[in-house]
Length: 163
Ligand SMILES: Cc1cc2nc3c(=O)[nH]c(=O)nc-3n(C[C@H](O)[C@H](O)[C@H](O)COP(=O)(O)OP(=O)(O)OC[C@H]3O[C@@H](n4cnc5c(N)ncnc54)[C@H](O)[C@@H]3O)c2cc1C
Image 1 (cartoon, rainbow, N blue to C red):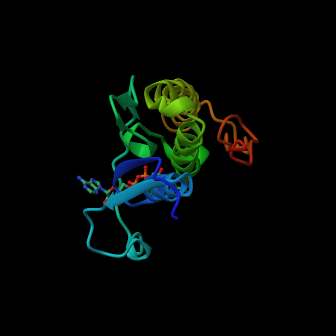
Image 2 (image 1 turned 135 degrees about the vertical axis):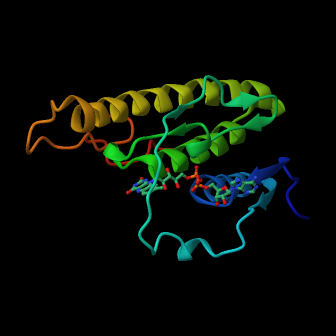
């Protein structure tokens, strides 16, 4: 007999964060539907020159009842740490981990803990990338040869946290 389904989830956006969330939630036993608006294949994106407007996005909340914001929808980072994809994947990975370990189906508690941790991560990454962007592009205080602040949780961090 098939394992019981842990829950049902709809994921809006089938890119880095959305697909990772869908895969890890499915792995945790959830029945997941991905809703992606783009009709073009993801691998076809980014081949032509373009101008990209960058706006700092940092939300005060990531959980609204049973609706979660993750990836760029929650924190869109300036590019100086090259960490947007890792953060989107980490948000997704940690969401599945939190829901997998939810006691007796206490989804709300699991989501509250996930939100607190991911708000911390997003806030730290935002502060670091804003500081680097301001120093290198506006203040003129970036030293030639100074390394960029790569890393997800901190500078030099090369990996996601273990699940
Ligand atoms: C030019 C550029 C260069 C970058 N370089 C790097 C880099 O070197 N390293 C790095 O780590 N990060 C980089 N990033 C950042 C990285 O691309 C993002 O952080 C990452 O894609 C975020 O993933 P996401 O799934 O949260 O959002 P997205 O990748 O933006 O995915 C959102 C998805 O949701 C879909 N969608 C939107 N609205 C709806 C809707 N209403 N219904 C259904 N679907 C919807 C979109 O079509 C899209 O597929 C770069 C970004 C840009 C723009």
